[in-house]
Length: 457
Ligand code: ARG
Picture (cartoon, rainbow, N blue to C red):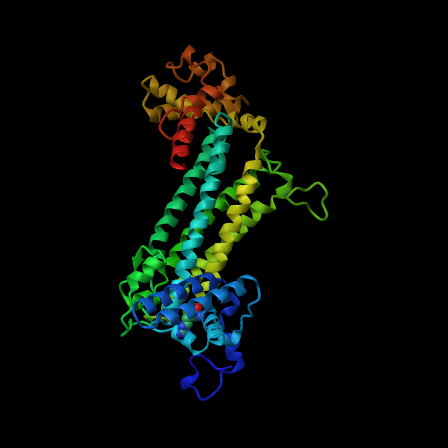
């Protein structure tokens, strides 16, 4: 088969090289963007008088026909044509004759592939943002349902202080919001038109880049043609934002795995989202969460692949950059799959209130409340901490919880302790008393939920 660039070559490409250099096996999925970009380019060429209106019409009709065939699964991608760009162009020329060869005027595959990638990623980021919002709303509903339910809050995975499940759910709303902000920021730099950079140095032909930007709804136009064809920052930024997002999803997954274990017993995962064991009949495994945790590693790998790919490339385009696509596509697919499965599973997660509340009071987790009680009586915090520590040690030795100590016992540690200590170690008042902004009290959680509802409208 004759190559589009065959003119300079005496020998035909070795078949091993064709297989080695092709990218059609993975970049075919850019076809809708390739065609969209080509149609805009053809319209601009005609408007500038570089090709005639009639030639543009033929090219555009031909491209639309090809799109129909690809859509219907009738199109045969050929690795002899290397990549998606040349497969479509070769087919166009086959269908409409030599006039099809005018499409590539004032364009190179270098700016074309950069354009396709940007159009593709712009769509996908918007899709991912929608998923994130949906998941945030699910966490908001969970926060609302459990705004007044206590669970142990942990530091070092040791019981620290009781918290409301509502607040724990809101923590994920916050994390996801930062993910959305990062992606929106990355979207700004993705949304820039590289077409017109041509191979690297621009063109002698009188093109109108602003018109192409308008047709393709780009907010910006690249202002340095060398940078335009060699820049993959937007891909790196996207995968790094996706890595942080996956880190969050993996932390959630880890919590779901822990909480659903018999040891914790805090949640029941829906049967329809768990799998069994082929040997142990009693098993119900949290595979969805485990796979989300596992797939996080893949996305991190993709980030390192991209950074390493780009790190020593001289300007401008280098063929190495063809390797940007598999990690990018894999990241998009993985992130979307994880978000989708979570949006289905999370609404069905049931907290076991009896368990979480019973666990909330154990472990001397209201000791800080005792220290703060003393602070309110004028004891310097460091001293209050020391006194409380001694009380806790005493309680442990007596095999008692803090609320099981008598007033007489407590008084031996500080004469500031009086009858008003009664009720200090009760869970619900203890939660409600945490009134500082962003704290765990059901009232503050309710207030935060209302704020988020407004923000996520
Ligand atoms: N398939 C190539 C890629 O993905 C398209 C650009 C090729 N450009 C070139 N000069 N060979 O990067």
